[in-house]
Image 1: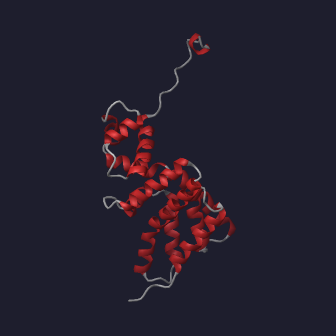
Image 2 (image 1 turned 90 degrees about the vertical axis):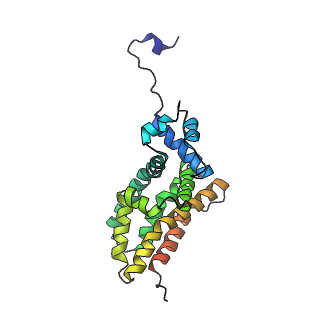
Image 3 (image 1 turned 30 degrees about the vertical axis):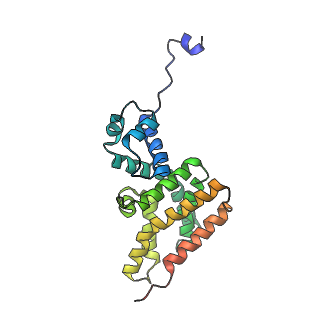
Length: 218
């Protein structure tokens, strides 16, 4: 007999959080199969929930669950991004677009070192490929402080671009960073990923070149 069973004050081990289990199950299934190929029943079964009503109880709908999966890992990525932005401010390099892009992408690439982060990267790519979901709108609705701060700073750091060009490039930035993250996730999974610091520097340079390049002409 265990010591806990002899102790009348001992509390039973807490049950798993069903809401978190649903998010994790959905993240994996969406990443592996796409958003449209996964049913509510698939998700609830994978999460170990007793019936399909668990998803509706916690999220209301499959679409709301997708938004929850989108938002779930962003908080940790964004907190690291904010810390790196603070480092930029302390260094005085506040007008360096390349450096700002490095600290924007760095937490995303670092997340790919973990299997969960790699699944998240693939899930994000599924979002960008599904016409039913607008990544820009999701970012507008759910983007945390760090992502908003980056966008705000970029607007002031690209004064020479025509407004339409600047708006278009900033609108495409989320999709570009997600694509880079997903590509790095594949390389990590395949064992072919370059050194992380090099990958971050290369991504920062590439994105900065895109943002600051000479506008196209008609």
